[in-house]
Length: 159
Image: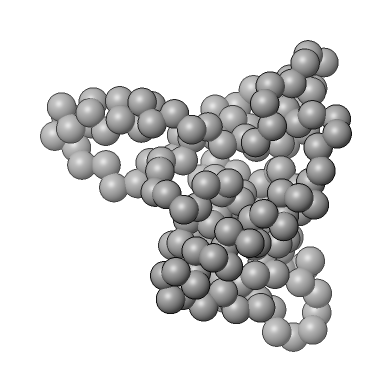
């Protein structure tokens, strides 16, 4: 799913820069802990669990489970991360500047997660739900399969 020459450090830097700009525009505080949690979420393109974040933050005493969950809640509220319900894990959002439905491809072989940008999918779910008298308040669609790298096929565009 990623080109061989993918510079992941650039992904992390871009995510942190977007987060700082977005929080500044919104008057929200991107504290050191929130920034560090976001950085850890972006360390790979796989989903990360809250307790893995806690371990990665170390035993300096500042990070406890409620602290990490509060940081994740803040990051989700500002669209900087998404929660993958089926994995009880979190991934960074490459487009936090605009509100959108979460649609994800999850590789069952390597664990890479790729976010889709397909407004028609979210619209179709909302439309069908409305036809049944159901008001969708939150929508996350997760599709599981095998990424092109694990299949041994050429990759698509980088995310």
